Image (cartoon, rainbow, N blue to C red; front, side, top):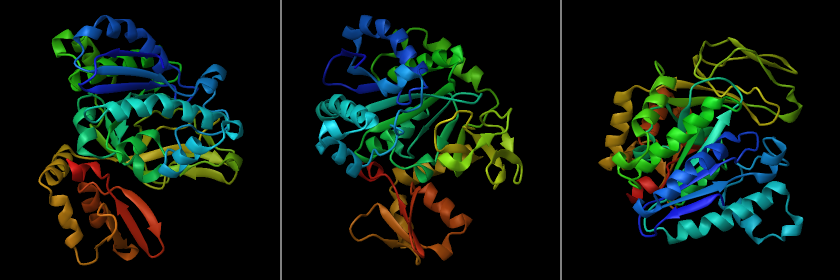
Length: 373
């Protein structure tokens, strides 16, 4: 634990840095802001908790030692780590166990949903952004950051820490501050921390140091970029693929269908669709080669939020080809033959973004916290 400040009984913010060991900027930003947070401890309306992630990988400057620590955050994976003999656990299993030992008491004793701000950086060049599970609870915090908002990663990546936290009812915001080694990335992380402190009500805005400057810094870094992008494609890289991203791509670069983006052992890797390139991989480790997203118009996001606030998201189960899971009301079963664009878009509007294959059918899942608001 890097630090804990404030008082019990109010909102709780957990700031998390270094879940990937080649992303130290988040830890540096936490250490930079922590003296100011401690000085304001008596003024905080709740608690701020700071945690470091993969300490072994941070020491070695690598993304991970044995496995990606930001995967296997499933109920089954957590139970395996919690109940296993520590002597038989791998490096990241031990790190995950240590995180749980520090995080779970914070979650258990909070009087309201905890907000977790997970600070990341990227191997390529580009503007900062935030991403989260598509829930009203997350959007209330995420939209307070003047950076592009990425939705839909939960469709294509399983087992993230923030996905697990959303599943158990808390808020989880991932903030990508910039390139790993860019000094501005630490500045962006610092700005995000203070903006979320204000957004969660831990301090009044007039007591947050440099709030206007932090907001202006992020706006300037993201000038002319779309406000909301949803992920439509993930290129998965296997260890034996010999994947190499083509040089010169930046985060949010427009790409066209068929454009060569990378090469691997089979030849050129081309964009399967047009859109915005996200997180091009210019590092040796990691299974995400790149993502492609499409811009979501602001009126569509407003419509999605209104549908869920009014409880109209339940009405999608009335479509004649949709069946609600009799055990889990947050799962809808749709025949694969009906998965044309408008149907998928409607499910997304209603918060059903996660997809599970079930033969000739597909199960769409929403985060249950929207139903419990």
